[in-house]
Image (tube, rainbow over all chains, first blue to last red; front, side, top):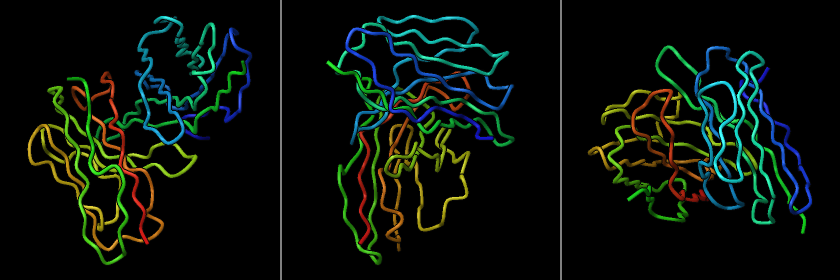
Amino acid sequence: QKEVEQNSGPLSVPEGAIASLNCTYSDRGSQSFFWYRQYSGKSPELIMFIYSNGDKEDGRFTAQLNKASQYVSLLIRDSQPSDSATYLCAVNLKREYGNKLVFGAGTILRVKS
Amino acid sequence: DTEVTQTPKHLVMGMTNKKSLKCEQHMGHRAMYWYKQKAKKPPELMFVYSYEKLSINESVPSRFSPECPNSSLLNLHLHALQPEDSALYLCASSHLAGGYNEQFFGPGTRLTVL
């Protein structure tokens, strides 16, 4: 089982719709979770982080965390063509030598106008 | 200033060359990271520096040699690389090297090894 799993997509949604991106992780002790957006040829950009169970909203983005189910999701409301990118879920995993940020493979999102 | 900068943007080198990648942040962060990202793959951690000391080396070959001259600067020295080392090299920084610390990435250096 991979440490962080995402559906690679592509996920296609029409402009104005809600895009729902999902991520599961294997380490039950993980405590911090991040969503990065990466445009083609660019570096990852942090768009959301969440540490507690429940929802966290920031503008059009909502991150949801369910530690019991080891599940993190990102909702993008009113999707725009400019949201088309790869979305990387990242989980901070504890190792004996320190914490390590591990990324999922990423989900490609395409927003069609 | 909330930016991580990296130079150069692009680098082409032969297998016998020695080159260095540079990273700088002025956010007062005390943890800095090097990642390697191959096409259509996620970033993979290479090194972590915490308070200017190397704290994590993810079993990276010795042809990659990191250096942290001060709390704002991070270098990656390259020597005798192989073509399979061609990738996007990303620098990141965070307030501390702990679980509750968001990492911010620089724009990356796209490296091609001939």
